[in-house]
Amino acid sequence: MVSACRTGVNYVGLVLVSAGVCAQGTTGLELSFSNPGARAMGFGGAFLGLADDATAAYANPAGLVQLTRPEVSLEGRAWSYDTPFTLGGRASGQPTGRGIDTAAGLRRAVSTEEARDLSFLSLVYPYGRWSLALYRHQLASFRSRFTVNGLFAESSEGSTVRLDDARSASRLDHVAFGLSAGYRVSDRLSVGLGLSRVTGSVEIVQETFRPDDDTDEAFFAPSSFLPGRSIGTTELLTDDVDWTLLAGFLWRIAGNVSLGGVYRQGPAFGTDAIARAGPAFDPDVPPGSERRFRTVLQTPDVYGLGLAARLMDGALTLGLDWVRVEYSDLLDGLGPELFTDLPLIDDGNEIHGGLEWVFLPAAPLIALRAGAWLDPDHRFRAAPGTADPFQPALFRGGSDEVHLAVGLGLAFRTFQLDVGADFSELVDTVSISMIYPF
Image (cartoon, rainbow, N blue to C red; front, side, top):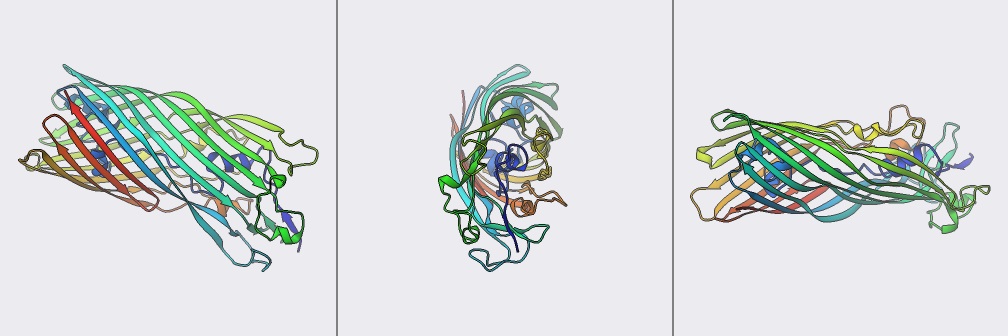
């Protein structure tokens, strides 16, 4: 049996995808396509057919015409992310029984990170058949970390190979500043348009290492991540701006039943991919030598339809949304001359449903909300038939998740306060928002 170590820092190829697109070994980057506002969160995100407060500036601008007075909306959110990743183990073949290569299967771990931010702020001003809105929306606020230490596989020649050990950290922040307008075409139909300036900030850094020395004993031992054994660092850095479009409609079908629809264009950001050699990369390459490439990080387009019904003189409101997220856009901007053997990601269909019960009459008005939604699997998975023995272990895909949501609203004479919470296996979100009409 011949032991071989897989070289991890190439100036082109899969390593830049591993470090840059999805942080090698993790399930993916977590982008949020939910509607803003704690009230919408309490509905399980089903708000396209309602869109009856200032958050409609982003959720569905056609709904802005339902507001009769100027209105300000403010929301803060807190996120907790659990991101699974492959820590080590056996990607293929039988364990040798040496060192840490003793058990079949993979060792998995979870990165837990938290984020908090002012997630939404808007000002709506109605004027005749028109309503105009300015808004700021936090489209993404994500953090993760991972380590690979001792991942083995069997090569096509039958030898044992080891993936270069790695440490990685990811940070993703997208913020939109937008202008939306709604226009009342008739008593039953309104339309809306929006234009936003989206700032994208991404920093994904991964450093790879050889075993502590060149002996067989070190090859099968845990890595100590010694600076002198660093093969190099790969980075994906985004600090760019793009302009995107937003469009929607709201149609009162009959009585208190309405249908809403929306299209949101995903921003595309120019991104620098950097590979920097470490002291263990190659004796002929000076440490610190680097290559830079320019690529595009394309975020998904989103479109959806929503139904809403107001029943029992307004005491009960029901909402149901279908949302299509084109996750495959994430890979469209990567040039084939730089990236080969890419993992795959599927587009997804989200289903949102929820209800609100308002205690009438009461002072203040008290609203209880509950909802749920299906979050389709949108994690990277290995391409079928890939020649890389490690890709199926690193990019394993996932499963659909069900989110459960609850909410509480208090409507006072001069303002409205809402609280919402959304819970799932991997992501928990808490929201507090206030609406102030004047």
